[in-house]
Length: 153
Image (cartoon, rainbow, N blue to C red):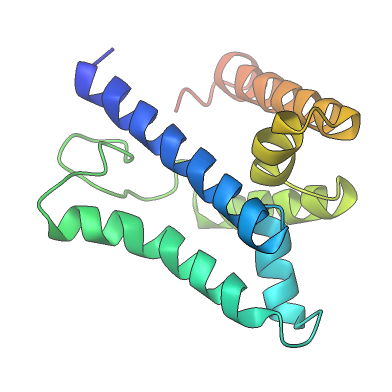
C-alpha cells in the first residue's frame, strides 16, 4: 500500500472523528450524513437547517479545497489519470444502488457515519448490529459481483 495513501487515510479518519466530536460537543447532534441530508430536505425540525447546510458544505468544500491547493483525490476512477470515471456498472445500476442505500439507511435508522462512526464510539448495541449488518452485506455483495457474476470491477 502506498505510504501517502496510508497517511491520507489516517488524516481523513482523524478529521472525520474530530468533526463528529465537534458536532456532538457543540450541538449534541450525531454526525449521520443520511439524517443530516434527510432532515435538511424535509426541514424538520424547523430552524435547524443552518448547521446541517454548513456541515454538508464542509463535506463538499474539503475535497474541492484539496484540489485547488494542488492535491489529489487519489485514483477514485477506473483508470490512472482520471479523478472520477463513469460508474462501473452503468448509470442505471448506480441509481438503483443509490436508491437501495437510501432505503437501507431509512430502515436501519442511520448510515455508516451515524452508526459506524458515532454509534460505535458511543458503544451503542444497536449501532454495533447495524454496522455488522451493512459491512457484512457489502462484503457478500462485492464477493457475488466479482466472483460469482463476474463483474470484476
